[in-house]
Image (cartoon, rainbow, N blue to C red; front, side, top):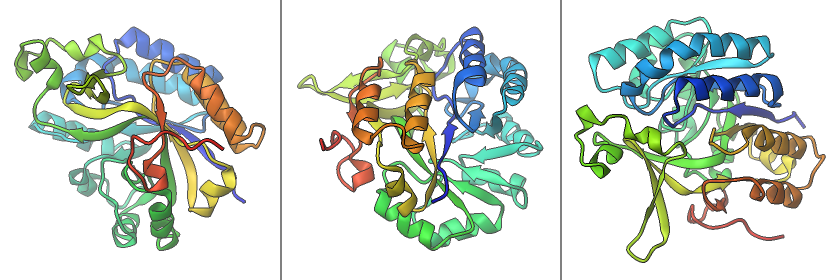
Length: 299
């Protein structure tokens, strides 16, 4: 059985440059992951704050033995943002495409498709492979059974499962954080920085329902798929993607590394994750073909 590889996905949240540097320096030195995504995915307005930090972060990660992937915006809306995507697609490193309009700029060279790209069948996956896709991270709402069916019809790509983190559900032209603080999107004052893991949204009944992150909607809960490695492999999954949050991501990565190397059982790994300062309760319903808010099934 091929060994599962671990990926640290792109950061969805707006963290200041010093926090970015501290976080990724520790990832470079301590996190047992094979691949690390860097770059702004959610909001192009944040890029002037984070862009100056990325060169040093990339150098440190590569010196630490990590493969670096440059992630691109999921909803480029302006000429400047589209040009930024094109410039990243011209880089010699592996690039993650999160919006299909980036394909012409990268076609013919290796790339990763992120969970924002709608890959719902083997025909779409094969089309992307013909244009250069080497890794495909399907949309988060797909079950493992569905991913397995797609992977079986597209053996040329390695499939990566979004395994840990608040689920990226939607992007909007409106900024929820700006609206919450009585501001317009164009003068948002980057209030999303106040909530480094996103801001949970309650229903009228007080139930944690969703989370907002600027223009992004996420789940309030933390999607955490913890299974025996053979179950992932049986569905064609070759990589597990961990989404960065403010909790101890090095410990998250260590727990999943121990899981894939069979040094802990799924029950123990799930317990270890629950002991961390997660931004919400753990769920895994989507992976089982059920409502995404369903908690893990006790075994």
